[in-house]
Amino acid sequence: MQPQPNQSHYQSQLLDIWVRAMDPGGVGMPQAIASEIANYTREPAAVVLDRMARGKDEFTQRWMQLGVNVTDRAQVEAFYNQQFVEAYELADWHAGRTNGTPPLSYAHAAHVARTRHLKAALDFGSGIGTTESRSMMLLVGCASVRTIRSGFEVSKPTTAAAVARN
Image (cartoon, rainbow, N blue to C red; front, side, top):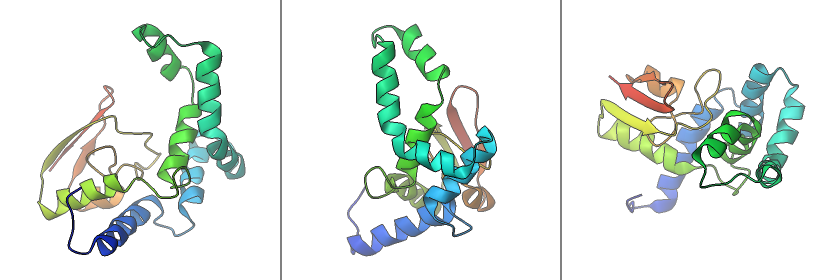
C-alpha cells in the first residue's frame, strides 16, 4: 500500500469500504458473514459464529490429524476439497476477529480499481465468497455487489480465479 497523506484517515476510508461491502445491513460484520454461511450450510447463525471463532484451531488440528504431506499435491488438494472448516476460519479473518482488524488490503484494491477506473482485473484465490458474493470486493480476493453495481461485471470461473471485466 502506498503511503497516503493522512494514513489514519485513509485507513478509516478503507474500513468504511470494507464494512459497507461486508455488512450492508449494519448488523455487524461477524453476524453478516455468519448469516450468509448459515444460509449455505443450513446451520443456525449462532453455530456458525462459534465455528468461526474456533475455525483457525480446528483447521490446524484437522491438518495435523490427517498428516497432510505438503510435497504431495494430490494430498493437499484432497484436504482442501474434502473439508469446509477453512471457510469458518477465513470468515472470522474477513470479519476482523482474527487479527483485530479486517483485511483492508482488499479494500485498498477496490479503492485503487475505482480511482484508476480499472476495467478488468484477474484475481487468483478469490477467497471464500458468499451466497451474494459480498465478501469479494474486486482484485486481490474480494468482489462486492456494491462494486458490481459500480460498473464491474464479476465472473468466478471454476479454476478459483475470478475475472472481473467492464
